[in-house]
Image 1 (cartoon, rainbow, N blue to C red):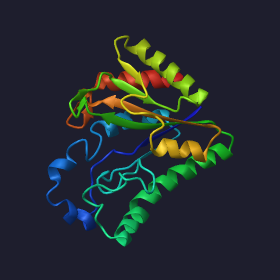
Image 2 (image 1 turned 90 degrees about the horizontal axis):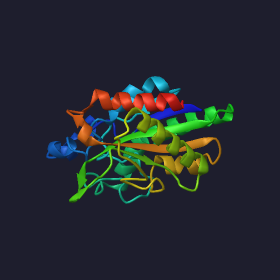
Image 3 (image 1 turned 45 degrees about the vertical axis):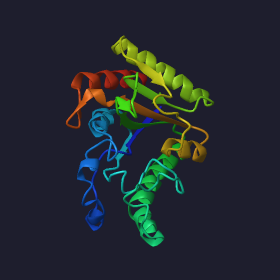
Image 4 (image 1 turned 60 degrees about the horizontal axis):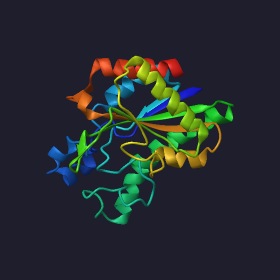
Length: 226
């Protein structure tokens, strides 16, 4: 199995030409709405295990790289009212190059006979809209794809071997079949591709850094699988 890592919400950068749109949004950009705190730190920790890795540093509030074209959440309230030509420019400059590059690299590896495990690294808020998330780690996958089910079962087992008290949820706090980059890539590569989203609770994150012990647990668990 060849591991590919991506991180769609690694940063909250706004390109200079669009800074005026976010002149009063600095506080929002620093929250989970602007990026996934701690995701980049974990992604970098896991990177030595991967044959290929790519992060996306532009804020999801400019354009959401983890949503499909035409999705209602593709553009945020800061960019949704832009003219269509401006939206198309954002897509051409930031969204399409990122997704196309990763899709191309996966395609090359599959064409070479490789089997791919793609893990998209994310973090989630401990509470959302008054609901407390009762998991430390979430593994998102398509339950109709036996290879993804088996991988996540083995991943959970490996995680619990590192820390038996971990709370691991399957397709929690989101569904693995919801619109997302891995969902799109499963359709493009029905064979030799496993698309998994790794979601980690932000309770383990301070100042955009994840607890070292917790990163070590995930690294060791994943390295044993790979």
